[in-house]
Length: 370
Length: 260
Ligand SMILES: Nc1ncnc2c1ncn2[C@@H]1O[C@H](COP(=O)(O)OP(=O)(O)OP(=O)(O)O)[C@@H](O)[C@H]1O
Ligand SMILES: [Mg+2]
Image 1 (tube, chains in turn purple, cyan):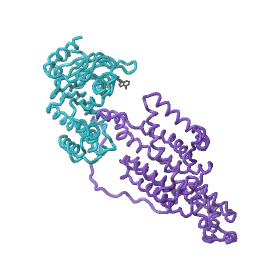
Image 2 (cartoon, rainbow over the protein chains, first blue to last red; image 1 turned 90 degrees about the horizontal axis):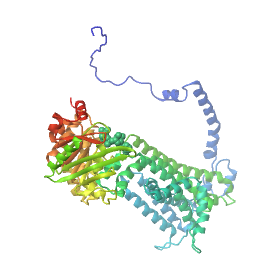
Image 3 (cartoon, each protein chain N blue to C red; image 1 turned 180 degrees about the horizontal axis):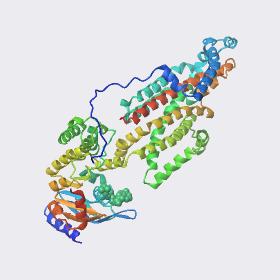
Image 4 (cartoon, rainbow over the protein chains, first blue to last red; image 1 turned 30 degrees about the horizontal axis):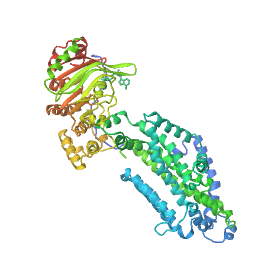
């Protein structure tokens, strides 16, 4: 091939930094807000809308707002928001009808649950033991709220309300629902037809109806099935309904994780001679749950928001308790402020959970070991 | 049917020693597909059998029947004196006697190398954690990667992962080791580090059944080379004769393709 004209020139060059790119605020603005005519028009419209609303909102929420007063008349005279309603009513909003002198127990319950939630976010604590600790904390919170032992005044579930009720219902749903979800997911993949049919039937029926109907069924139907004279507590009935609903959805997510585990993992575990449960607990589930964690977090956040539905069957969660607090005719005008507070509360909880979930998802995508 | 007579002749010869694995007229179907056809194989304790053959010939299927990852439908499989029958209760007990190494390593990615090794003994043999870790360290030294003990499988090269997989299988002190193309997923420069470990293991007297196309390995350690094609054992002979005077046309064709 004397006629070939391909060639390459060997050359040695030291490594250097890339030529400087334009950076900073101006570049960002140009790329994100003014990259095209349409984008520029949209940016203009958005600016105009903000210009119209923001000053009014700031005046209402901050400048003209009343922050502290025990006289509703002060609020009525003011042009801005009446945040004083929160200071005035926060006890009822946060603890509902729980006896006033016992509110410290509610506070302790909140601290326990939130503390545990923060602890659980650290991966070094992830193990089956963490779940056992959660069971213990849930039991402790139950005792704390029920009273009747250790010299605590008995306070039945009909007196519960507000944030402790919301949080306990939430934790009970997840702590009770997760194991059930795992069993349902495993059962749905079982080779035994009876077990498989029961699991599929349960999952599909519960997923086929709205949460509200599950709660109504739980609150109205359970008593019918119970023998004469036996009543199940209203809180417990709602809790069971919430657990079943959560478990049915979480089961499908867990099943997705189980399916994602390569067959080789099952075979390797089999060749070592693990029993079904050893294989499931030590090899398959730890991997499957890690894979589906972001999806599970979504469901957990939804379970948190779903606790507000219990107010429909007459339990006073944070939202229900706030509605009760606003029955006071003196303060009823300031519902917007009270609900804004609840709005912010739910947003902070859900947003932090969702940010945490995003963080995990990022690490998972990098293929890092959680 | 001269092939079968070969096996029978070898069987007679081996009967002097102790037989540890026996396959008698084993048949296996995947649905309608006849994957193993009257397979006969006898393995003596401490002996090494290399199984080769074209893709889809049933090599994996056969060795996976030996630890019952697959179930056969006809014929007898006897492993260390226990017959593998459908209602076998303690299949786990037999699997612990039989170590297996896979093409894709199949290490547990969520566990460290150390935990990959110790989980088996700790859970199924009630070995103490410390004792298991000491044993694991010894084995990791034998496969020459003690410094990788606390890493995760994902941080290891393919060759290192496969050596961990071999060590993991050895942790349970198996009587038989099965290898299913242990070097096929490896880059050429890593094949040798794995083969060296296998050769060493062979010299220590382990009973081994290896599906592999590493003919150098077969020449060096095999007591018997078995050639399979479309679910049948086509030829079985000592390596010297297998490579120098193969009898079946299919064997000759196969050898001309894998030997250069
Ligand atoms: N689970 C299965 N279901 C259906 N057919 C299967 C299954 N496993 C294997 N087979 C078929 O059985 C035949 C033998 O497969 P096997 O995996 O034993 O071959 P092999 O000799 O190990 O091939 P390779 O060298 O590619 O690994 C193939 O034709 C394959 O398609
Ligand atoms: Mg194969």
